[in-house]
Length: 193
Image (tube, rainbow, N blue to C red; front, side):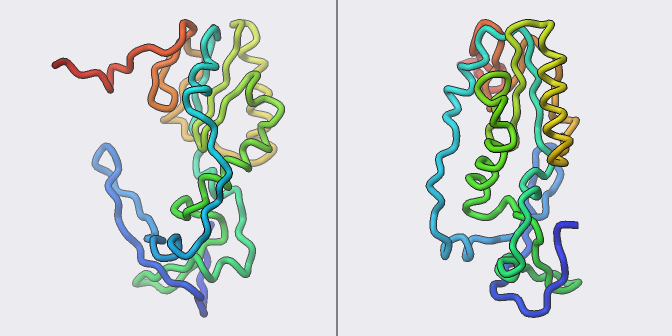
């Protein structure tokens, strides 16, 4: 797994339950105090408007969601004692980067930018754990997906199948409805007045 028992934590945080859409719950660690003590990583995230605009003119799209992608980044042993948490079963620490840390998003974005560097901007866009493979021509889409899957396998990055859509002419990406024509109104965000 991504956690291990620890005897002498340097920093201790509590476990909290956070509601998820659909009535489910997510177990999270409350790293607010630790995050206050950490300097901010100023690596910028990609601009959402540019990522969404880049889909214009693409005949086929595939939207994918990385499953526990943050856990690709292993923590150095000396840092694990800082990401400790207490439960009724004992005190544990993360061995891989948890998503609740202040700089986890920027760190993860740098990681995916490196592993998909040959595709980003051409055949693919990535924003944190949201990925989009885009093909100008329908006949290129399978080849573009194969290239992406090859990278996913190489780095043992898994997908959340319930949040993926393959070979579609349009769909939701980063909260926007994208099609070959560009951005369209998102019915989930539209309201009648």
